[in-house]
Image (cartoon, rainbow, N blue to C red; front, side, top):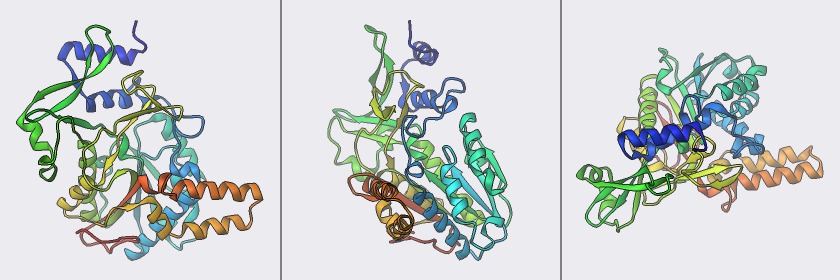
Length: 372
């Protein structure tokens, strides 16, 4: 007997049509309408499966709020602006942002919050989190569901959004590349990874700059949905004006490697075991996101580390201000949170930051080494 209805569903699908892509497996495990991981539960916080930066410290959201407010001012302080968050979790980040910008003249009155969220459970948390601020808000299944408004620019943010989007993996063989798939082991009946056929189409998906250096067994990951969202955001920023801020763990340059992982209760979990009950993520290829935005006509800055970005926004100074009125235990907690966010051996280096902006938009704060 299978462990879950979702596992039964995936095995039936494979039995009918053959092995499925890793992207299809992730789509089922994370987004199945009834049994998907993000559809049925709140995975955030110490009682959940993982903790994101906004849950670690209020400083994170406060500084991003400052960044958003200055970006708005540099756009000329438009009377209306859409503040969009992709994958907003419990709404903690947006709550901290709205609290931090209350004293910026005109900004709170200009904001309409747009949440891109598929989980009914998390939508309820988000509504509760921002209720004290009285800012109008709407919810959308996808970014492109947000209707453009003439003369209304956007500030788009995504913190740990792209890492959960479905990826495909391709493995180098003796003569070419083949897709890595999920099948059913005929002996055990368990899910397992299998290798598809080598095809010229698979070869074409590998960046030309990497193809010549590949060795047998190398794996390259492609996230089509991430590229699509980056393209959609870039085109919208060109049309309406505005800026985008993406923060996630990943690499600044396209590279080989198998980064797919599952996490449950803050521990690594077998990737194909109990689909729907563990989070699935992969490292974000920030070079691919940047290329997509540039090819759509927008502009981007150089990829920064999270530690560098938060330091540029003054997180050390903010920590000292918070500690000024804190007890010894509170001050220690602030120092620990600061280290977790910016230390090289914690989130400071692993997490990266990409800032994009429309072709006619003034470059926002922290643009370093603009690429286009």
